[in-house]
Length: 427
Image 1: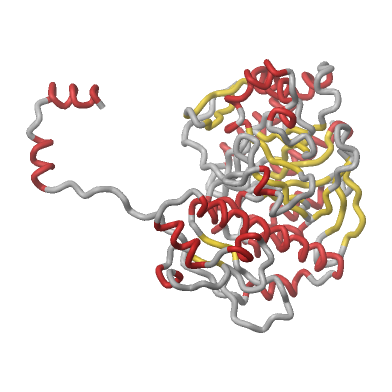
Image 2 (image 1 turned 30 degrees about the vertical axis):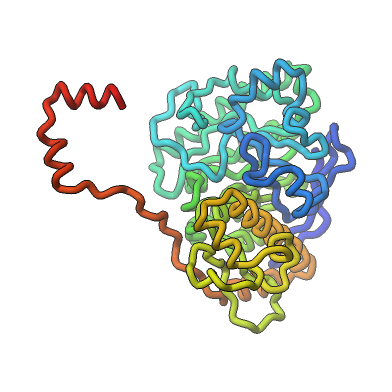
């Protein structure tokens, strides 16, 4: 995997091209860019055929072991690579420990193990188990095992522990990689950790630079704990850390930073020097919040814009216009706001599918605009345009908990301990 840097602007970040994969030498990705966040190797709610209506070009896929771990035995028995197993041979498969859309389950990590949050609950993964998984999958690139479970509320002790564990994991992974014939064509991405401690971040980079020739790029992690809350992150504390890290990383290596970041914060991180993000923001908006992305990225527009459209709002019940006027995506060309609202009310599976198709298309076009502004060094204008748009109140999940009646509460309280135990066992 090779990154070619083409332009560095004064105020708007940098342009480049990621490519040079051994398996897919003709595949390239213009940066700043996004790679597609997946669940079990598939883009959530989007089939391979439906994806052709969004993007019919080969792309880069973000795979996490939290939702692919259960596939290991099947992949190993088939003797296929993970890309072949998920029928995405024309796409690059990049393997990471964490899913940026999932909130980790609280708990204290064990010394030699890393907690992974699978669909069957929390599992502790050893380095040997992880590298065996990587050898079974043979991805185009992967990140060594590392401890990045820190955020702005983490203590100094936790940040130091994150760095110490990561250095130990990475050393052992690199030793395994050097001795593995299976991983000879796989590229490695170095994890930069250290929480919000600039000194620890510098130590992490210094450690990784000792093996710089082995790393095809770097992942900036440990800034948050993943999940929907990342969209509400305040960049005041985050941006100085990201900016300082990017200044110390080699310019000729690509820089990844994953999470469901707000589009304005994405612009600021692009200006700081980050090259590649993921689409977990799109997924969380469509599948969990039932919202369509409708923010404007046309700086010449003088209309009043809103960043999101809440498809659960009853006022769209008889609105037969598209989700976003002028949008060329499949959803907006074929369906209306009223129909998408109806799909939500009836809990139809087609609802999140259509929202995902629209949101992905909108986000892809947004990054095309970002690259154009970086090329012209006008990214601050785009940021100002987005900042002036109206935002919806933060999403709150519906309260579906049933309120127990006084009679039911009394009945429960009158049960004997034996009856309570029997009831619990039956449950």
